[in-house]
Length: 287
Image 1 (cartoon, rainbow, N blue to C red):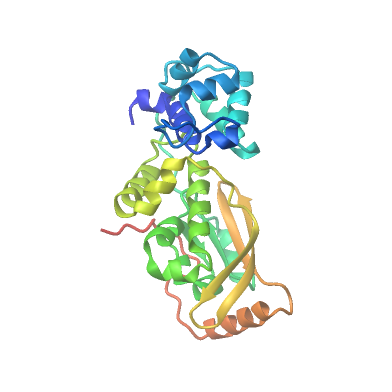
Image 2 (image 1 turned 90 degrees about the vertical axis):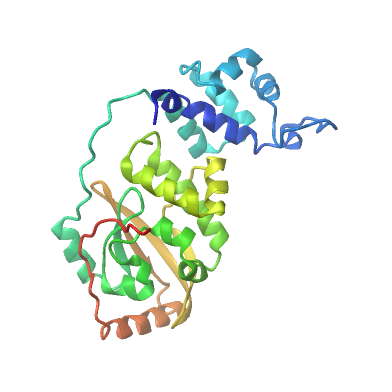
């Protein structure tokens, strides 16, 4: 990506977010001749207390040093939450830097041992949501949790994964927003470029979500999935940082129906051969 485009990450984000704020949300009359879905540039500038010319320079990448006060005013006008405001401030603080070769993501031996010992579905993922290692029960929960698969790619393109998710639309929104947060301003990373390019070409839904510039943390929480064998499972998810990797664990409330079904799944997994258990693997590449 060119340095000009890199420098205008801030402008791209501002354009995307103002398109999502309606005049009514901003306390403005809609008017009969409005041609844009969200706010006009001059409306954002007026509400933020800055000149229209200055705001135009920001969107066009001609001014990369806005003050924190200006950014906080824009965040208020654009209805950004705390995480989104932090992301906005990070874009403004970014500076062009030499491309660096990122080290391959490798799972240390102690994590392989931990995966083999825990009695719940567990796996290790990288910055791009590539599954790097997993235990037997994780693969029993979903074959897409084998090393070599990419969780975002599976969610967007794999019909079985879409059926697996109880609320696929919401999951897709969350994953795409978390992926953008993970990228930050590291938009030249070859793995990110490859994955975004593939998904943008293959999925209209991804293109729509990507254009929104949503950012979100995909941390711990509770999710519901539809397992094809044991049925519906309500599971808690914990994501624990280990070095530059993330350890993900799924577990059910003790004594619940989901806990019983997860135990059944575990007993079934003991007799199922698992070719890729807890092994490092390269990210999945498919034509």
